[in-house]
Amino acid sequence: MPDPLVLEPPFRGRWLTQNSPAHRIPSHGTHLFGLTYAVDFVAVDARGRSAQPSWRSRLSVESPEHFTGFGQPILAPATGVVFSTLDGEDDHVARRSVIALLSYATTQQMRIRSGPAAIAGNHVVMSLGEGGPFLTIAHLRRGSVRVRAGDAVSVGDQVGECGNSGNSTEPHVHLHATDSADWSLARGLPISFRDYRLAGSSTLVTQGMPGEGEIIDVG
Image (cartoon, rainbow, N blue to C red):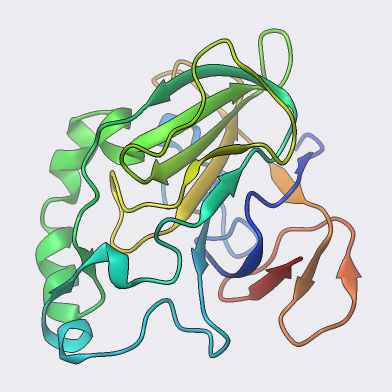
């Protein structure tokens, strides 16, 4: 396995790690679209909740605006050039209840057949060097993408806002790196992050990949 690309976390604040490649590979259960080492982060409050519970969170769907992460700035994790973007996809209702999640699962194959854009929703693809590697930042809020193809981007520049577009059950940000911008051929590349703390710890992690269910603080 090649050495991981070392990235800055693409946000500030407190975020829960989901579908982590530190837990399993492929992290999202598939090598399709270069997703082998992808990772998801969900913004949470001081109690580790992505949104306050309600009857809707138990029985129905919820507005994405109800969630801590929705609209939070998403930052470039590395310096590079914008290869491509997509904006204009709707932010879906969020689903935390078992009932809502089960009904959503039945449409999963349809979204996969619809191709990468249906999976990623609003997104930014960055080229981190001449001819790659390429980094995808996905599920951004509709209308929030701030960059265009060809733009030079420095680490920490805002590229969009956290949203709930594409294949997403609640607002979160998704990252994965590939050796190609052609997702039908792309192979996933390992990534890691620098300078974060695990929630409740004062120790700075200078480089690593948080595990499944771990909450990280980025100041």
